[in-house]
Length: 223
Length: 379
Image (tube, each protein chain N blue to C red):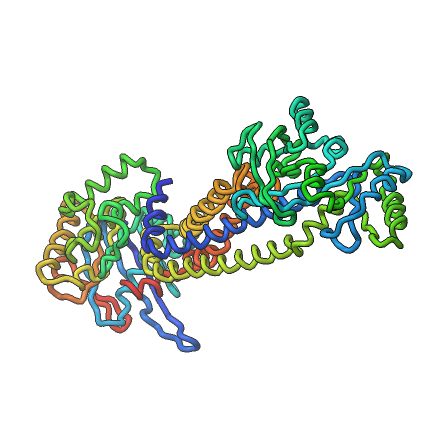
């Protein structure tokens, strides 16, 4: 049974009385440990698909099942709790809280768990170790480079050991060198830690780091 | 508790704004605690007088004296047990800012009517014996560091000259509202000092039965109705209440000012929280993506708002309590004026209310934040 199963997914946005269909009849399956990249022109619905998969938005039609759980049938409150345990989200612009240091930013998802302070500390330091930033735990986002900020963002995404990592153009705001380091890190997470990753990108070179590249264009998803 | 750090760093995100907002609440609640205590103290003062004592004064006004001959005529009235009299002295001790009330009284008849003043018997006798003796409230003794037996000089304003007194007795009021900042001396002393050129300022009439007050009041005022010095008689409680209302409707004024200040500060605090909420739309969206529940975000924003107002409010009410504790400098003007713990608690409850009311809209907005739209602004 696939880890992620998307069936006949459709999404339509409404602006005033205008109906704007994004895609219709999208199907996708992802196995545990798979690393997929998703490409497509602007406005094709890549981020929308990612948001639907993360339970941040509701589809107009269709079904999304992750790890056996029907995401589309969940209520708002259930979705938040489910997201805390099963989704790791990596943003293009990192979205770290500027008032918290790297350690505190990574700790955020763990505040929603029953872990003790000591256990949280162990998890945070492990996640920072995996992204190679153990020595920057006390640094604030403004004291870090873009690449380092994104690595903290990835540490935050993996700290609660989620079922799937969703990365929305994770290298979109980085220079080539930093982008390469981030992609290497994602590859490592996939290979060493068997993380399932779906990455949206505009960059063909970045997309090639995944096991397979998907294309979403004019509402059609193809491999 | 694990979310306290998040709340705290958000609170300190814009330190200047947080401090200024908290300080505005400090000022508001300092005013609230102080003004409320003024109203409470004045209410207590207006109720401190006895229902068994009447005050007979000139119908023309409190500053007009009454003939000495009225004493016997009052005493002869049916239902009257005893009569005494007093005068306002209005002296200055060193400097006009050292204000306290001074009364020349017919010492023995006066003290017999006021059991509210607890005085050791030996001191009372010493006060009676010596013409220049003074009876002083315990708070006044403390205020100026006076001691029993000390000589002090008051500079007369209504009755010019330097007036020397020896402190022979100290009274402690049974009820704080009676006041412990008064100064009494012999009427005879004043009489001789001005060569007999003086008349009693007002008479105090002790009733046999408080129920007879309306009848006796009517009787007295009718008796002097057509004289050259008509009188106005009322119970001591009504007299004190009238004295307080001479200041105007202080209760209404204070409540009106308090309410206006409260709403002004409410708007300030609400504006701060709205600004903080707007600045954090993106961050709140990110927290939702991480799995923070709507209710949790609501509580985080609300607690932050309450923390600002409670910290500021606590500073205000405790500052007021510290400044206006027992035996504070205002007691010379308003006996019994003190910020009580009930006022402190009420002030803190108001601070919490202020925080909840000012934080409820931004908290609601954070809770209902549409994640996708908010993410588009930051992602």
